[in-house]
Amino acid sequence: MFRQIVLALPVVALAACSTDPQGTPASQSMAHPMAAPQHDKQAGAAPNHTDAPHWSYDGANGPQHWGSLDAAFSACSDGRNQSPINLTRMIKDELTPIKFAYKPGGTEILHNGHTIQVNYAPGSSITVDGVAFELKQFHFHAPSENTIQGHSYPLEGHFVHADSKGNLAVIAVMYMVEKPLPELDKAWKHMPAIAGETRALPAAVSASALLPAKRGYYRFTGSLTTPPCSEGVRWLVMNTYKEISAAQVDAFTRVMHHPNNRPIQPLNARTVLK
Image 1: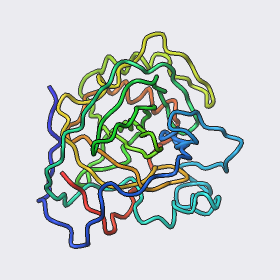
Image 2: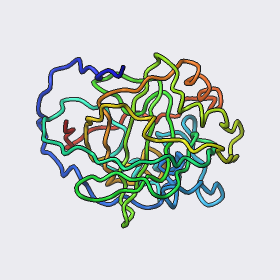
Image 3: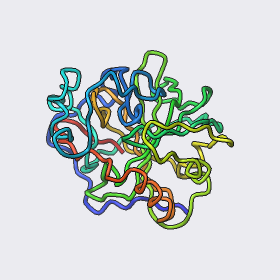
């Protein structure tokens, strides 16, 4: 049984001016999850650790220093529409349902040093704003990067899509510890323990099975959550969580060895729609 994410605070409008929820195109340099976490040069591409400065989640190369590590990372410190955010003070809107056209396509799993990523075969997509965005890959963060009314979740999945022009749309899913998620085990059983390792998946993983059955969502304009922190990303955060087990969360955190969530960024003049 899937449960609605409960919002503890009243819903009020932001005092600041709203911005266009579609934003502007994000750079196609995605090394993260949105290419791995490093959103890399192509949405589904594995990162090339030799062509970009080293960054991390703590210390001298941690999030507070990303913007100074390389000129290409300047948006990490100078951007005004950065992700992740605390979703709060949502404004009610008639959001058009997202059209999902997914089929099993998770074909390989990789450890890029920043996250565990599953690359997806062509042929699965969502339609948002009348535009088709193809699913390129999905990856995870523990604990969650985005929070909802200040509430953090044990795990967050980012399903990264790109349209024909390279614009990005990310479906974010919050996971709560309640019971095992069998579809996730199809990937987790082959999870690489060493950074840089990629493994083929013997059975294609279904992204649809990793999403909640109810697919209402919140929407805001944001960025990649790892360098280069490019902006103009459509963020579509599911408002219902999906259940996983404590063992599944632990399996991920043991391989990562450290939290891989960027700190919450200022909302500034943006609005969050629901």
